[in-house]
Image (cartoon, rainbow, N blue to C red; front, side, top):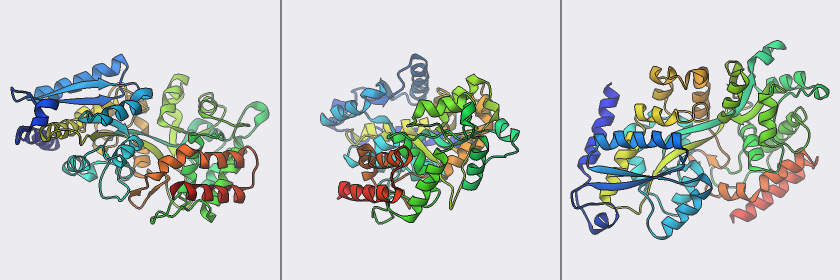
Amino acid sequence: MKKKLVASCLILAMSATLFAGCGNKSEEAGGESDGQVTIQFMHQQVEEERLSVVDQIISEFEEANPNVKVESMPVNEDDFDQKITTLAGSSELPAVIEFSQDQAKTSVTNQLLDTAAMNEVISTKGEDAFFEGALDVVKTEDGADYVGVPLCGWVQGIWCNTAMLESKGFSLPESWDDVRAIAEAFYDPANQSYGIALPTSDSAFTEQVFSQFALSNGANVFDADGNVTIDTDAMKEAAEFYKELAGYSMPGSTEVADVKDAFVGQNAPMCMYSTYILGGCQEAGFLEDVQLALPTNTESAAYGCVTVLSISNQISAEESEAAKAFVSFMIEKEHNEEWITMAPGGVQPVFAEVAEDTAYTENEAIVPFAHLLENVGEAFDNLKLFGSVDGKNFMAMGDITNSGIISKALNNILVQDADIDAELATAQTSVEGLVK
């Protein structure tokens, strides 16, 4: 109750400062003659059911902040980046924008966001309120600021069918050796049984799955000084292990659907996928047997994507105060839970207070997934990404992934049986050329 009161006071305090120093931009872009401030909230929740939840949260905010009006701006995911580019070009970015961590990083690089405003919201909430990894991956390149305020997210690890594991005497894997032993024990391709389901195609999915093994072995694309570190012994060890595991997976160049189908169809006891696989497991009737494992070699590592709320720098001071109040409202426990339950299972909390709240865990939509919340929280605490090193997030990583340099090398190694040393050396040279 005390935390909620403090957060509510923050919102009221922010609202009270909305009208100090009104300028011309306020009247043009959001200030009104009656003292009300209007801001826009651009998001990707376009389905009717989700829109109704967004509208409900906005109504609750406006009731608590009668001098602020929030206009909902739903935009399809496929059109989102282009819409940002168009609005930014005309200096008409909405006050609050729902971004993925990578979209937010791009917008900070393009100098479209107010990092000071987002730092303030996070500082007031308290950095320790967020899962550590969720904050680490939304820092700027120098590690000094945040590109957005974490709202929710999804994580990826090794999903395990515990009933299948127990049938052969295995528990959840804790190390690379454990994963190898399980994969070998279940591999029986003649009967469409595989040890683990992994992607091997030339795709971003393969890169992100491989990154989890590389990072758990201390290998990254950059070191803390920004030097490219692909052609290293640690990366080679990870590539060798991934190739070994791929030998226990489905044949050929496999993709997202192949991995999901194998695990949901119970043709493999383990798979690498995001939390969005849980809906399929629920439909297949074995969700209660599913657990998330983060096997380590030298350290723990989980892959994931954090959804953030970012604040534009193309708005007036009054609108900025309103935006900070709205974002702070959105990350209050009660309202954050409303947001997350729009997509139960797939979308997960980035706050311990939400993951541990009985009102959330006992929500009818969440109950089937509640046994996974501790695992997911651990994954968020251990979130690591290629290009994220010692509190820095090298923005060039987006260009590297988009170039396909790493995914092409992996596909050559895994499917074309290319020499690992040669492929890593080529990738090293290519990335060095890209980031010059």
